[in-house]
Image (tube, rainbow, N blue to C red; front, side, top):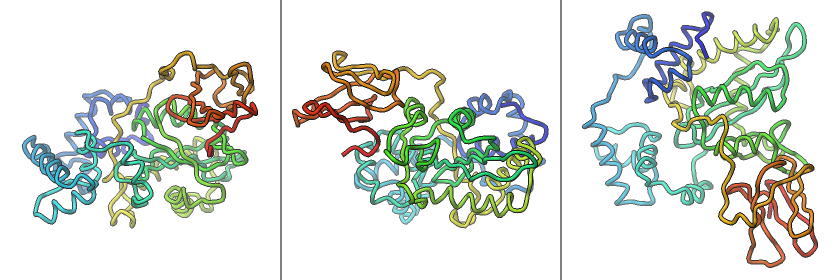
Length: 380
């Protein structure tokens, strides 16, 4: 995305902030659509205080010996206490007088050295604090609800990082369709990388309120190896951080304002988003700004992800029109979101039942005696 004249200062600030938080310069240049020479020019000015002298920053720290020492301390304590997570390890090392980075960095050290098992993380979810431990662990996404323009309506699309409250996307949309959402998500993924998981409510185009089935958006995200979850119907608190962001957006920007058109709204959105991320103190962050806690993901967006692979090709079937699966001479419904996708039928301990998987996700269960099926995200 090339730097536009109207928001060049906003983008410069965001760029140097992301680099200061640990993002690599050249991959970030590709995401922002600028040359490395331009990037290093602004980084040099930032480091000397020129043009951005009014922005407080922690000193640059990058000695290899200090980083290696910190990692060794984290890993040694983790070996002594294998059940401790990043926050406990950091707190204990601080109490012992060691200088420690943020808990998200400690978590990243554990991940980098394969000290975090996916199964253990999944099992620990009910006992975790509401805030996720690291940037890009979870993104929350929703539409704010339409706002007035001189003609037609604007539908603000918001994507928020759970850990840092960093606003990843604030887009002025003309509708709430799948194609519109996907277009803005691609731009967001290309700039910030991919999250591990995204959560959204059950309204259109996110989910199926009545049946809890998978949607085309779910499958598209799953192809990027992004976990997808949905809040329970009538439980907006699951999207609490994004809901709170919407309140702030309404009070600070949208209340009593009528935009001329989508382009006019987007200019105002861009300016406010820059202030929210980089200047506005956030009470939930101890009065820090979201940009001080956010770092880009190392997981890159793939334009054409490969299809899923399965262990037993004889059990693989392709979902046909209508979301139907043909298995042993019978027809079963598994969901229209998977039309054209290869799926695998797996046996279970109950000879009456068989599970249907798309990649590693169970999407349906077949009753091979009654020739019926149950599909969707709320399988028993």
